[in-house]
Length: 292
Image (cartoon, rainbow, N blue to C red; front, side, top):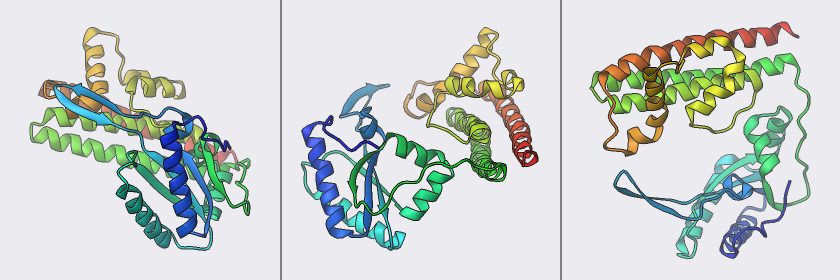
């Protein structure tokens, strides 16, 4: 893992030095402090102000920090980090938001050994801000098919349940004639179905909201997926673009128009995606069990 933050602006370096100092002062059980996310990859946004659909908006990337501990409960760590959070924001010079997560070193290394995608990404892209030197991060070991099957099942269950809930919410919005919000919920359902496929087949995922990219990333897992959003006519292209754009437009653009007829056309497509997702993911998960 990388160890230098010299590429960051001086103010950002000072923020992180402050946070590390306070963590070490108040949490002697801290074994590692790892910066991950946009500030670790250099893709952070310093401050973005713009007018979107006539509404002023602003955005600033967070410091995402993983605090790795040993010999202390998660609850106690959480309380300490909350106190550090409060102390950090008392200084008006600290403008960048900070988000802490914490894990025990044994838990972290178990997740790394199993190749859990979030922790693997943190290890690959993260920057070590502090290391007690007492522990080493585990390497991913080769999983047996029973373990692969278990992970795939866990990921599938989570994402499929999320997607099913979004379909429920889409129908609820539809029933109240809020077609714009119904389109957003159908987008979220589709996103989670695609996540379910990627995780079931690869055990890996990355955050992505663009349905065009998501659908392209899974199309090789089943030819049936091409039936969901064929985009072979102007109307099919329009419907897919509407669903893709709904992630942002349905929430922020007062002029974004979605009709009852649009939802009537999109809902069966998302339900078809649901059915295909269940079929191919359950088939893949069974296949893992047969390969033991």
